[in-house]
Amino acid sequence: MTAVCVKGSLRIRVEGISSLKEKRSIVSRTKNVLTRMYQISIIESHDQNALVYIGLSLSYISHNRSEAQQRWDKILSELEKQTGGWLETEESQMF
Image 1 (cartoon, rainbow, N blue to C red):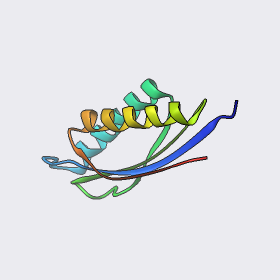
Image 2 (cartoon, rainbow, N blue to C red):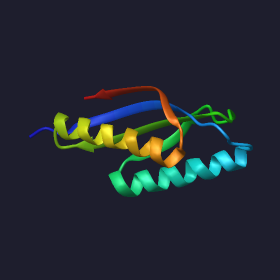
Image 3 (cartoon, one colour):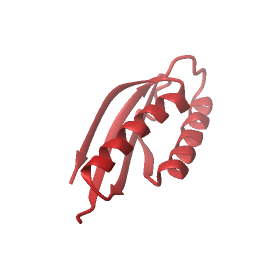
């Protein structure tokens, strides 16, 4: 059995944020929840000073491609739920 490493980058559009402090709070909470739920490594990697966008990069290891894809789909759904936004762009690589 070969493990699969997943590396992803995404951009979430969120409306109604009035300050960077509020955005940082949402990002921090989201990162904590996702790390706990899915055992992933996640950082705010881009769009750090934009009020309407959250830019994240993440990685994780799965046992196989099927499991990796299922986890990716669940992570994307949970991201939208946690941030109250919607996914604008996403890309992932499995190797």
